[in-house]
Amino acid sequence: MTLRKKTLLIIVVVVTVAIAVLSAVTRVVLLGSFAELEERQAHRNVERVLSAVADDVAGVDQQCRNAATWDKAYAFIQNANPDFVKSEIGYGAFSDLAVRRLNTEVYVRHSGEIVFGEGFDLAAQKETPIPEGLRDHIYAGSRLLAEDGASGIVRLPRGPMLISGRPVSTTEGKGPLLGSLIMGRYLDAGEVKRLGERTHLSVTLQTASQQISGQDGIRIRPLNSETVAGYALLRDLYGKPLLTIAVDMPREIYSRGRISVLYFEISLAVVGLVFGLVVIILLEKVILSRMTRLGADVTAIGENSDFSARVSPSGSDELSSLAVAINRMLDGLERSQYEIARRGRAQEEALAAKQTAEESSRAKSAFLANMSHELRTPLNAIIGYSEMLCEDAEDRRDDGVAADLVRITSAGKHLLTLINEVLDLSKIEAGKMELFWEDAWPAKILEDATGTMTALAQQNGNKLVVNCAPNLPPMHVDVMKFRQSLYNLLSNACKFTRNGSIRVDVIPVIANGAEAIEWRVSDTGIGIAPDQMDKLFRPFSQIDASTTRKYGGTGLGLAISQRFCQLMGGAITVHSEPGKGSTFTIRLPRNGKHGLQAEHPRPAAQPIEIEDPAELALTAPATMP
Ligand SMILES: Nc1ncnc2c1ncn2[C@@H]1O[C@H](COP(=O)(O)OP(=O)(O)O)[C@@H](O)[C@H]1O
Ligand SMILES: [Mg+2]
Image 1 (cartoon, rainbow, N blue to C red):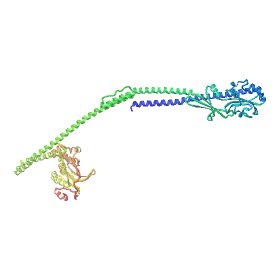
Image 2: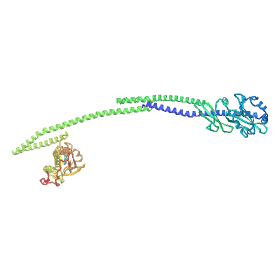
Image 3: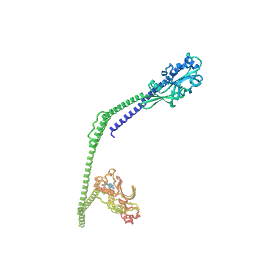
Image 4: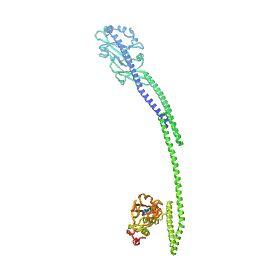
């Protein structure tokens, strides 16, 4: 969902909810108070109707009082004079029944004996007998005959009647109580209609309902959206529920309230709509459109990978700070892009240089290998012929020539050694040196090496001591290369020691959890200064030029030996003290690269210590293969 849609949704939801809540509250509060107002008004109306009914009762009562407080009536109760009836009661009399709207008039003695009584049919303008059921309320001691009289409503078979009973007295209101006058008026449809006209309300009578409660016996109930009804209980003369008077009223207040609420809601909706629109337009102008533009700029930069482009910051708010930050990031990206490109170029150049160097190194090695090979053949011929000529000269006892030929032979041999060593080194560096693995007895190798070395040692007045650990099993090596390495260490020791001793120890060790054999060649010679140590294994390096002059050599021996031992999985290390002597140690894994070829019986070899080369043959292990 886009930010625009989200914002729109949020605004719509918020405004709708706000309007709904506001209008709900308004409905509850405003309509509630309108309903209260309506109820109060309805209540007043019902009270008005009730007081109109009471007025009617009071009207009948007043007529009754007037007629009863009269000397002639007082006399009539006593003598029942028929003239009185003729002149004062009924249609033949002077009284206007239509105006007075009376339906009955009864003169009763205190004992309950009716002196005279009749009914009036006001519609037919006829006199009738006493209304049916009225006699039930006239008896000695009844409320209507009470000394102070009574008025109210009673239920008769034809309908409810407003009734009044007043004691008859003289015009001055004196005289002992002899009887009472009773007057009544039916509360019929005409009367109810008249009530309605007087109160300007629609009034109906219903049978009494007990449901009408409340202090004043009035209950208000809305019938529908147009009409509200008020009910009041009418009680009879004896206080018993008689009728329910119902008043229907139009709900003017309430419907006016409803219209007001409706207007309020409509204006709320309009305000909400306008507010929402204004907010959306402002958001669009101030934020959304700028964000869209920023997004489009950044996308374009990303798609084209053009980190030299920049977004355009507008205004001075968070969005423009964001644009500035993006530009700063683009600066960084541009710089690193440039840096990466530069490094890539440098790497390519370095790679090309490396390849060139490797190629030239290979070419150099190949050249050396070829040259050494081409040199060796004529050199061997020179050595061979010079030896032959030397023998001839010796036979002829031509000492001068022989001495020269010996020099030629020795120079040729030195050159051959040099060429061989150069060949070895170039093969190693070209990665073409092949190893020929085989199993060999250390004691046997030692014997071969010391055999040839003894003479060399004696040249400088040195003593050679050989010490081999007993029971050394065979080791897996390239015997030729190992022998060459050992020979080189021994020859160096002999070369750099005078009138001292040279010692060889062969010791089994465990190195890095694997079986290994160490060959230690120690001498008591000139030793090596600590700062010269790192030169030792560099090709063509001798410690100083004077050494070369004094002791000869090429400076290649140690370099080649070290590389041979490394090819066989081992190494050469040195300990030396100038003036005291040196110890060169070759350590080789016993199992070489491929492990031993077969199980060999262990020889019962004893440690050998050889001082005289003649003893060697005697002490060599007898079980050696
Ligand atoms: N046992 C030793 N005592 C003193 N110096 C030694 C010994 N072995 C080697 N060196 C020094 O190391 C140099 C290099 O030896 P090497 O590589 O065998 O070359 P070369 O024997 O042809 O001189 C020697 O010239 C010498 O200076
Ligand atoms: Mg040497």
